[in-house]
Amino acid sequence: MPSISKDAVAARRVLVVGDVMLDRYWFGEVERISPEAPVPVVRIQRTEERLGGAANVARNVVALGARAGLLTVVGDDEAGRALVRLLDASGIAPHAHTDAQMATTVKLRVIGRRQQMLRADFETLPDNEVLLAKLGEYEALLPDYDLVILSDYGKGGLTHIGRMIELAHAAGKPILVDPKGDDYSRYARATVVTPNRAELREVVGRWRSEADLEARAQKLRRELDLQALLLTRSEEGMTLFTDAGTWSVPAQAREVFDVSGAGDTVIATLGVMLAAGATLQQAVEAANRAGGIVVGKLGTATVSYDELFSGS
Image (cartoon, rainbow, N blue to C red; front, side, top):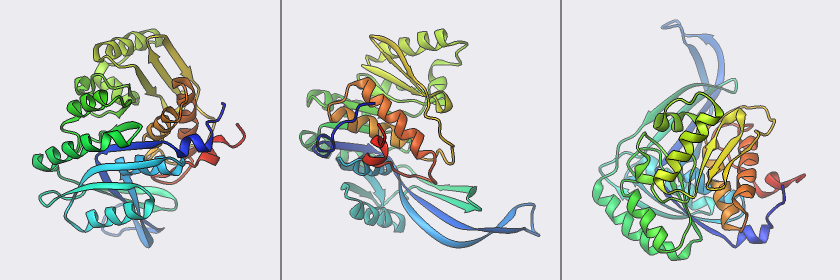
């Protein structure tokens, strides 16, 4: 895979918009089963906080060496303030709106013996007035960025995604969407949409063969007027659907340790490479490689430029 130069990457600016969350990790040892119920007792020894959701996408953009801006909504609470602190320390340009009526989304993972024992989610949806204010700032930010990534986690932060795609088109910016839910009409006219297998099945139904998959995916792509649909397939690699046909790239042969945030790494790498001048196939190859690297790491993680292109 030919590399895109570090200088080309460093010159690019990517705007990430979407649902953010605070990923909390409690690490400990499992030494016994609880006398209260047949569950393990985890003795917590350390804790860690990381950027999650759209914030992890932006974090991956920065890790690759490009510049990232993040437009989002957080709650006026302890978790929201923790997220802002992490953003300030990350090199991401934060454009975070606060909604006093919502609780910042938190995903708490309890890890024992390097295995995830439990995940607890805390979340509410943002107020519509806050989302409308974000739309105005989004339009003002577009001229400063080369490419837009819309990271939809279904938490309400992209209520006006159709209008966001229209505005990005008017500004001449490519738009990448990480989708959620069973209604993709809201993503119409995006440049690339990147569902995984379960997400695509929810929209087009279960396919019986590769030919059936191609027919269903291409039909959806044409209906939505997408330049490309990129299906991420875990151990089966990735398949790209465009006007030129179907093209697949095999998965990188690596041990899978944790798939948390792998989709964030994939779309961030795809966006950075496209913004830096890579062809769509080159960008997919890089994204596939990045996904293969990040699943070997614990939790929401990133891939650096040197990791991505070492030995290429």
